[in-house]
Amino acid sequence: MASSEKPTGPGSSRHAAPGGEAATRSVPAARDRPSPPPNNRLPARERAYHDLKYRILEGRLPPGTSLLETEVANLLSMSRTPVREALIKLEEEGLVDVRPRHGITVRALSPEELEEICEVFSTLEVKAAQLLARRGLSDEEYARLDNLLNQMERATQKRDIDRWSQLDNTFHSEIVALCGNARLQSMLRQLWDQQYRVRTAIAPLRPLPVDSDEEHRAILNAIRKGDEAEAARCHQAHRERADREALALLRNPRSA
Image (cartoon, rainbow, N blue to C red; front, top):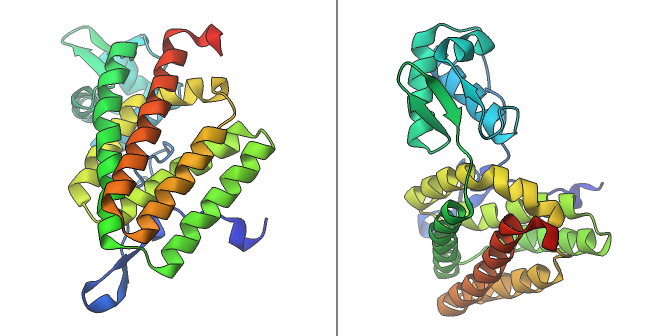
């Protein structure tokens, strides 16, 4: 694939600096795929946290899995103290239930919980689009987002839903990364982790994303014009339709 076809991740997004100059700063992707612990130089509790989170989100520890604290420690080849600290953090993020003296259970996400998460997640993504319309896009940023949409439309034509889903996550992550609100970005990252397993599971069941492709174009055009109200309206309509679809599939996957 030519270099112009490569989706650019949010971590390399360029942000307008005061005085009109462009500045580059790393921003965690709002819809990034889970990854293993980055390196062995992290403190043990951080390695335990990243390792367990990766296993949970990727389904290696599926919902309903119950383990004693000692079993988790043996699984990670670590002592119980850093594992206990990691489990507390994962419980705070809604990924596990910790039961004193009984270990942990990986949480399953019910349709009702997903609906609550979607309500908050989608509201924040809509706000990110509005903020980006206010801030404005450089020609380079617009070209990068436009290229992502071109790739998504080709993936739709090829019925490559897995590829389309990856590009969709990158497109929305770029908008969030460019909006300039660090707290909003952090909140979206945590909310995405909570729903990642469900979203991934139902992605192949979704209909061909022709509607989404058209909605993405409308969102980008509104952002490009600097129309905050239109960017928010288009993104809100897109998220409401996509969330209804996701929740319907979760409740009745056989309907796909």
